[in-house]
Amino acid sequence: MSEPHPPRIRTARPADEASLARLDRVTWSYVHAVQPRPRPPYDDTFFTDRAGPREHLVAELDGRVVGYVRVVFPTPLASNAHVRQIQGFVVAEEARGRGVGRALIRAALGEARDAGARRMTLHVLGHNAPARALYESEGFVVEGVLREEFCLDGKYVDDVAMGLSLV
Image 1 (cartoon, rainbow, N blue to C red):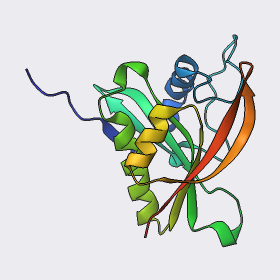
Image 2 (image 1 turned 90 degrees about the vertical axis):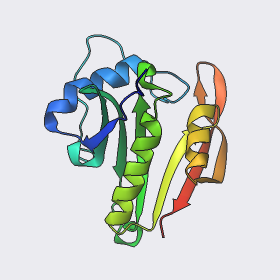
Image 3 (image 1 turned 120 degrees about the vertical axis):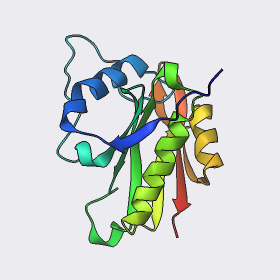
């Protein structure tokens, strides 16, 4: 039996927009989302002025987009330009456990380093154990916890700030 193919990681293209919007809809869960569940009629808008294709890396398996990571500047301040922040990270259910998430995170870290960034930060919901474990395994550490920052589906959830030095 042959090993599964590793994911192909690339910068998003404008033509990926509808696929990424659908991926966000089908993977939606209060495990990682603070926005309400998407409701029809669906809009295939995904990219924004602040986070276009250039700010997204996508993962493909067998030619199909199965994940993405969005990396942006956390603020528009010049004094903060050495930091990048993950502000979106999704892997399709059927692609989980195949190294897609890890490949996306490593690619994002590599691109940030290549661009001269000194730090990568992110926020993750306290109850999202799989994502937290992945981030920790890649070197991120908890830098702060906002207790009960969100009320999701009637339950209070912590917002965990994590960071990683890139130098």
